[in-house]
Length: 197
Image 1 (cartoon, rainbow, N blue to C red):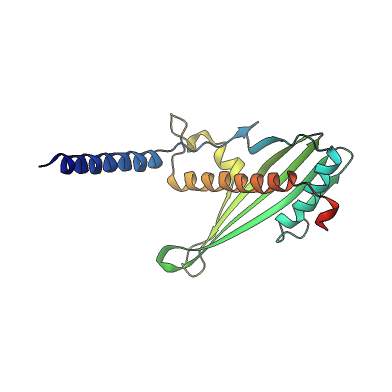
Image 2 (image 1 turned 90 degrees about the vertical axis):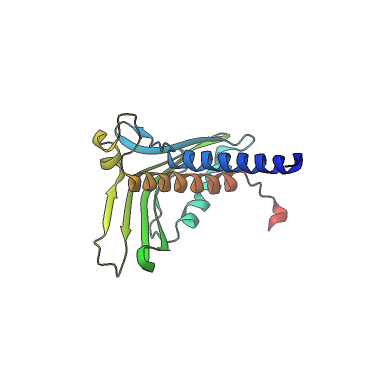
């Protein structure tokens, strides 16, 4: 065996070992669910220096109903003076599920945006999850996050979530929050000039 053949075999072995470690790391990922006062609540504070409270409020006020076109009454509280927007959101994802049957996953939640000079805070809470597979003969599955994830019996001693499906649902909520947060941040950082019209 030549040196270059040996190097190729060692390189292949390293790739296989690294791949296996990555797969096992993903399988053992710990999904954390942020719980505050017994309630599930995702939060983020974002600094947007150089922007006034009024500028940020106007951007968030325009973004909220656009983000939740499915919700009739997206904005529940609209308090410009105190820099507070509160909305109800609903997001449905349609996928192909078991046996090729359509699958519907629905998230409903409350979204609160608090705005101050040069920064804002976004909170996602009162999260409900619904899972339905029409045509599969299965009933709709509904989960109230605060009830499920605040119950210590649903967690192992090390703090990880026991059921894989519940871990996947928690990951979905974290991804939902990350997507909404990123979308809002993009809007909040936009500088509008008269030339944009």
